[in-house]
Amino acid sequence: MPKLKLTYFDIHGGRAEPARLAMYIGGVAFEDDRISFQDFGAKRSGYPFKRVPLFVIDDVELSQGNTINRYVGKLAGLYPTDALQAAYCDEVMDAVEDIISQQGVTMFMKDEAQKKAAREALADGPIAIYLEHLQKMLDARGGEYFADGRLTVADLKVMVWVRGLRSGILDYVPTDLPDKLAPKLVEHLDRVLGHPKVDEYYARF
Ligand SMILES: N[C@@H](CCC(=O)N[C@@H](CS)C(=O)NCC(=O)O)C(=O)O
Image (tube, rainbow, N blue to C red; front, top):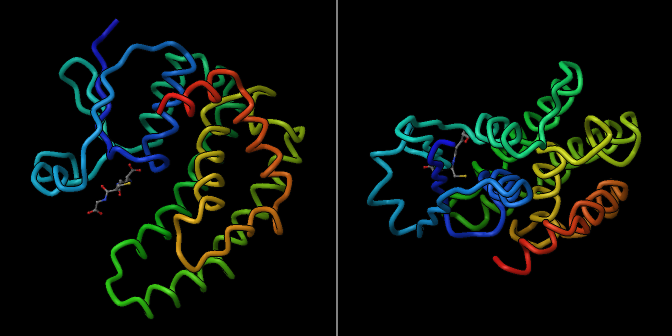
């Protein structure tokens, strides 16, 4: 088994949380390298594309959250082997990546009025569209999980996003948006959080 190290911010949520959770659920040993925002400033020039997450497999570097999710999903038994189910899984993870990238643009806005306008526009437009369409996809795939009829890394990626929205981490985005627009995603969130290992993870970290 190669030596695995995942570097990301010491926060709840974000792009590395699905991979952290997947390895925790699957009992995959890894070094959970949590950095502060201050450390990031000093170290970023050494990271691929000057961004995190960074995953190191022995001495091989991997960037891109969803690439890491697929890799650890395979190790943890949380990624489908069937080609179509794997595509369903990828489609959902890429959709969530789209919307978190749009949210990410607002993170560094210094002007509060500009940030407010951008976040309100996101809530009324793209976030609403992604919530509603992901709910449709969940329905189309049986209503419980996004692929393979069981928990996969796609469920972890959606759960982390919806949990973040409801937590109020994005000022000016109403925390009840998922409940109003996509109640089945909130049921899905509770289903995933009810997994014994996910429950254990959030009790520990
Ligand atoms: N496409 C990359 C995006 C990585 C990314 O933007 N990471 C953020 C943290 S979640 C970051 O490092 N941002 C620093 C910056 O934009 O300067 C992925 O999917 O991992």
